[in-house]
Amino acid sequence: MSTSEGTTSSVKVGGLTLEVHRRGAGKPLLLLAGEEQLELDAPFVAELARTHEVIIPSAPGFGHSERPDWITSPDDIAYMYLDLIDVLELRDVVVVGFALGGWIAAELATKTDRSISKLVLVDSYGVKLGSPTDRDILDIWTSRPEKVLAAKWADPAMGKRDFSKMNDDELTIIARNIESFARFCWEPYMHNPKLKQRLHRIKAPTLLIWGEKDGVISTSYGEGFAKLIPGARFAVVPGAAHYPQIEAPEAFLSTLRGFIG
Image (cartoon, rainbow, N blue to C red; front, side):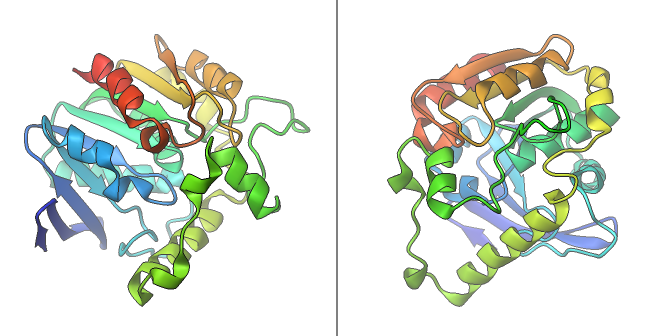
């Protein structure tokens, strides 16, 4: 399917079909969206597409991508994305991941640096930094909705969505995304116990970007995450929470472009 913003197609990868969105032209940038897929229609993507071909796959179980039973974790998804990189013949690709997509990007980068030129993780889940009794990441499934909204957004009004104005396909995608997110990240909660021990394998230059007011995963968590990756840099976007790319797109893009060029 072709649109004014780019193309959306179905790509066969490792025995399943992934939905893949492509925007712009230029050096490839693999954008791994967060669990809510807010990045798909975000203005910052259009800006990136001025200088890059932005490739956004929907993870298994998200958007219109298939979700076979044997895919049970972000680690499994990372292997699918390695296959996608091969299928699309991507080389020297910048990988940018948001939240769940950042977790998957980190898993991917521990496995190989063959095709990755630079890695950017934005407010990403994936590791356990504290003790077993410490709460590193807000429990978004048992907390009250208004608390979660306030944690995700510096301006909670930006996170409100009018479901009554959505069509059946849009509502189905939202339901699929929530279900798949819970399936992959419920237990162990929002992390892979093995990933922390693998992050030293990341060789690509890495930047972690965090919203200053993120109430889901704090900047101290982000700093701790960065310290586990050799040579990684850490940057904070002022005035934004869990979605700096949405709440403060100009500051976010300035930070991102300063790293990826």
